[in-house]
Length: 392
Image (tube, rainbow, N blue to C red; front, top):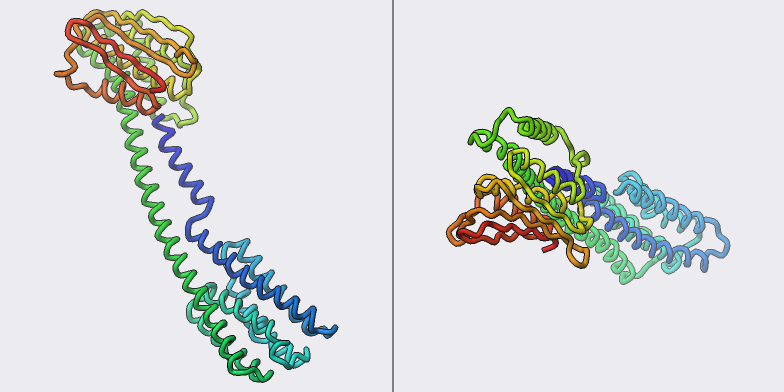
């Protein structure tokens, strides 16, 4: 479990980078917004050319050029995640600045309504320039559009109302696009920074939980063995003790070397038997009984085994009887399990007893982490009964 926490958060961080940051999503939104804006103008242009051109080729060539530059600019932006400044400048110069004069000079469009669709395309060109170009270049591009459109409308004799309305649309398109992009970019950066802080905090939390799990595992195995040997309760040269020491040395090597994918999680019965064998090697006799054990997730089986091992270690250290009883059964509905560890030692008064690290960290906390619970039932002179239940 310890390895999986850290690995899980690393995987989540990689996935979040793959999906795209909030800033990149803001860019995608602006590309789509200006694309829809350009699409509405192109629709007007296609309809106007179809109705008014009377077979003259220049308007068709003009709308084809606008369509081609739009496909180039926005297609590239969608593929790469943002605009290419060269394509934006090409759209501004050709579609926004040159197209109205070409239609006037060679297309025969000499009236305000006839040339209006070409002027309309300048609004979407100014919006794209405002967000895609550096600030100074964007100002120059919008100024060029304003100047050429002033001249173009003057050539066709547009009224001051038409001229003022068009210039207002041209400038407001650029300003509104820039304000929207500024706001989304700012919010995207703030969100990315908040996500980075949250991921860093969760990674730190996962590392702490990993260290805590390692401490619990060492407390329940290696430290329990060393404490027993130091107290002189067993013969250090006994074959079963030496076997346990070798097994725990191998465990320490795995703890250092293994990754989450290499950790073996046996099924519940085998996990409990492994826990029982580990304490029996330290001269604790355990009477076991299993009845209709259900299939549980590997993490739950590991939590049951680790909590039961520590409960049995407590019997060996504190009960003074050298004998414990472990019973494991499935719930009636087959959806859960109960494991009990009982001894017939002196017990203790729960009201005046402060639980140690083993009981708090290796029993209660382990069961709580997998959605289970542990209950200790004891009284002076009545032994101790530890019940492990999943789900809680």
